[in-house]
Image 1 (spheres, rainbow, N blue to C red):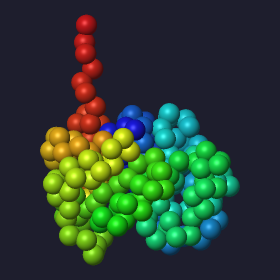
Image 2 (tube, one colour):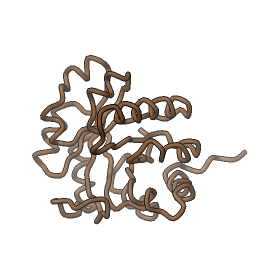
Image 3 (spheres, rainbow, N blue to C red):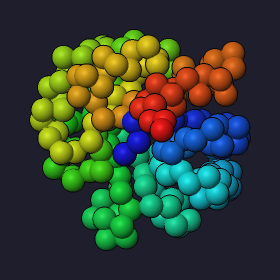
Length: 202
């Protein structure tokens, strides 16, 4: 999976960022009526197809399936109501959030496309009951996850990426650092440059 994992809270935020070269983006929609959920997910699917990006739909796995999406992200609570075998039969991949040992064991037993660990550093996104996990936890999670890709999330900045990747994370998910930037487009460019090796010039 791409090392830069963009997360946005509205499909409109994808419009200026996808053309920059974003290849992996999650649409995280909260507290919207179903018609608006469907509109945004359908629009996001079309945008990602146009720009060659992989769309991941957060939470709303049934709508994602209805609209032909092939990747969803589920939190631990969402796993309780999700039909994971049905998703697998339909070829829909799913990433799963984890925060402690029990959640990691549960997630790995479900054969996910990736597991996410967070918050790695303090985050401004929302109040969380989990303390910052730290890089030692990233190293431990990667050892236990083995070949399953590990996504780090929470408090990430381009400057912190070398340490995160050195600890074993395969991808870095970002929400606040781009959404709250004075210039989200410029900040997104910084993330892309920081997560992809420079092209070798002849």
